[in-house]
Every structure is written in C-alpha cells, then in structure tokens.
Length: 354
Image (tube, rainbow, N blue to C red):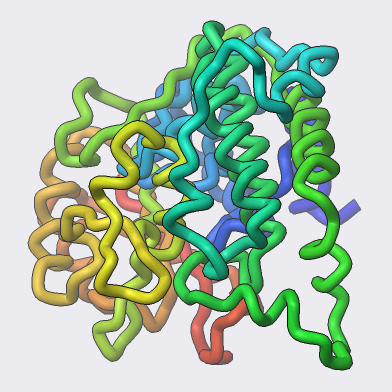
C-alpha cells in the first residue's frame, strides 16, 4: 500500500463526512498528515478551519484540536463534527423537522426575498420551514448536526455549489445536458437532508481528547498551541481573492436567520448579505495580516497550506516566517488541480516553520 494511503487508513475515528465546499482539503488529507505526522505536537489550532476536514482528520489522530472560522455556518459544522463527541440527531424526529408544526408561527423570509434566485418557490418554503424548526431544537449539538446537514443539502443543489450568481435557470432550463449534476439538483431537499443527517451521525465519535470549535477573528483567538495550521483564503497573482462570505452568504443567512433580512444587499441581483471586509481577501492588507498572525503564534510550529501562484508569493511568506522562526521548509504536493481553477500551473504546498 502506498505511504499516503497507509497513513490515511491508519487514521482513527468516525467516517469522514463529504462536502462540495470550494477549497476543501479533503483530497489532500493523506499528504497533509504525512507531513504533519513528522512533527511532534499535541495541541493544534486550525486557524482558518473552513469545511473542518483538516480538524476532523486531526481529531481522528487524537490531537487536541481547536477549530476556528469567521463564518458561523462553518463553525456550526465544526461544532457538530469536531467538538461534539457523542450527540447524534434522532432520526425518528426527521419527519417532524421537515413539516410545519401547528403550534409555531413561521416567517417566510426566503420565500419573500429569494424568489427565482437559487431555488424554486416550493423549495424556498421548505427551507423556511426547516431552518426555523432546526433553530427551535434545544440540544446544541443536535441543532448543529441538523444545520450542517441543511448546509450540505443546499450546496449540492446549486450550480457550481456556490451562491455567487442568480442562476436558478441553469437547473430549470429545458435543454439537452451533457453532465450529471441535473439529477442531484432535481433530487428533493428531503432526500438530501435525510442522507446528510445519516452521514453526519455516522461521523460523530469521541477521540478521548477534548476538542472545541470557535467562531472568531483568527487574530483574537486566545490560548497557546503546539502547532498552528493555516489555510487562508486564496488571492491569485493578479490580486483577486476568494471571498468565502460572498460565495456562501446564503448559508450564513440560514445560520443567522433572525437577522438575515436586515442584512440583505438588495442592490444586487443575487441578494448577498452585507458583511465586514476581510483582511485576508485584499491584496492591500494581506501582507500585514500574515505578519501579525505569524508574530501572534510565534511560539508555535507554523504550517501554512498554500498555492504556488498565491499572493503574497511563497518566497515572501518564507521571509515573513523567517522573522519569527529559525527553520522554514517548503514541501510541494505535485500535480493537483482545484475544481473550477483555470490555472494548471498552480501547485499545492505546505510551508513549515519550526
């Protein structure tokens, strides 16, 4: 068995959950662990946790994991699958979670604000129902598992798995298709939701080590860690950054249903949420952000997951790391192409500073 597969097979714990979230490191986990396993560490901060795939992998290796992400939707997924040790969503309660309860008043926020943008009218009504039922669940971990399953259900029914355009027509147009996503798009939300609930429940496990999930600005995360793993938002060499808040604003709306309507940007066709500008998505602020982050965690082993064509350049990051660390190594993955990426020359790498 190849080394990467052997390492991945040795990982302990539950069944890794699937995701179609852009930028997920799920396919790179064996390679990432192959390199991290050479470093002595116990406590670890996953500073830009995203999908939680790296945190989940490290939990399976019995590390003391702190997941952090500034998106509440990502935090809820990590609460369900990284911090949660035992709670599972009661599958016998699924039917009630997907229908309107007679003793509850329901808002129609999605139906009223997102007609003909992302989902059909019937689907919008279903989403309004389920998100309010989920919000009423008392158990925090069960609620988080349901939110995670709802988020994944929303993603798989979207062209490109994103919310960056008003493009429901791509699903509904009566045209000949040469790709297989149509069947997934047309599968009812109920079917997707039930599948993801089952998958999420199967992913829950207790590693024997307390892990936690945070929803914070990374520069404000407290505590000390043996290792800090950083997978920051990608800015290409032209200075164009990946804005995950823009891509997944609809999931953020679901996670913040009570304040969603007041934050909608009605001046844009796809009605995203208005949100704060991130230091990590601007070429004007990214250098200073990295310097602050490296200095903040200068006592930890620092590992940056990066792409060779990113901004700042790899050499610049190495120089910034050398300001706080004596030894900096760069490990290249080789051939790996991200979905939707048009740059075939970009290489995945880990920059390891000790």
